[in-house]
Length: 296
Image 1: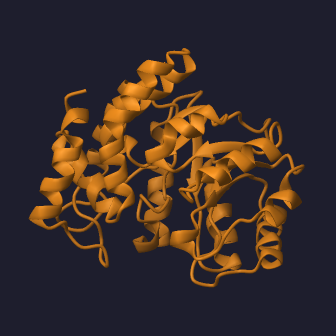
Image 2: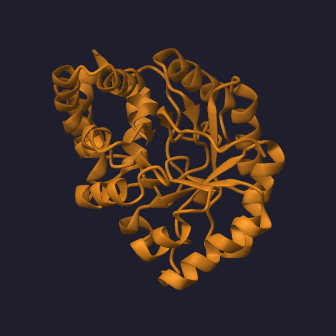
């Protein structure tokens, strides 16, 4: 396997478009990814929670991974979500992604089981032993019920194949702690969208970003402004982005992202059950928050 990638820029955690028949809509997928590429994203992260991997069959996951791989250009980063509730199934999904051509996977703790730190270490070690991939850890304790604590991070800090952590706890102090403890060893990846600029300040050079599906240009402009040293401009952009980002963090994340895609003229269908449609009130609230970004 080639040298582990240095993660940089905005990499959308891709939604999975569904047609009226409930099947994956690859034409809408292509339209959406073409739009995001024009905005300046640097890579693609299919089959994460924003992509509703939990509702997909193995065959659908395989089709999505192949489609995204075929769409990607040289130099665009590819990171596959290969999460599942059991270690055995994570290995199967990860091996499938590796065979399709993904060198790097994004893995949260297995959901529902709430593994203890020593169990989580063993889980990730077992996956790495079974499949030759790089690993980006995914910390989202509110969703997974388990924390990737410092005992786990200390264990993997000098493993060259554990390249980063997408930090989505929403706790800025934790991001600061990761940045200061593991500088040069584990890359801090922004995953708490409503404090993305704070992550950049603390050294996150990359952003695995669900909102990029429906506000790609704004997210990419924020990243570019920060990297160009235009601090006040970046702060003004984050102020504009904050309301919509914060709305997403309050719930119904996938449904709002998909509705945002519809508002920008690229409909991607509804979420799959158990995710239900937004109410008219919820639509109006998110549309108002998104308005200044649609007119970016």
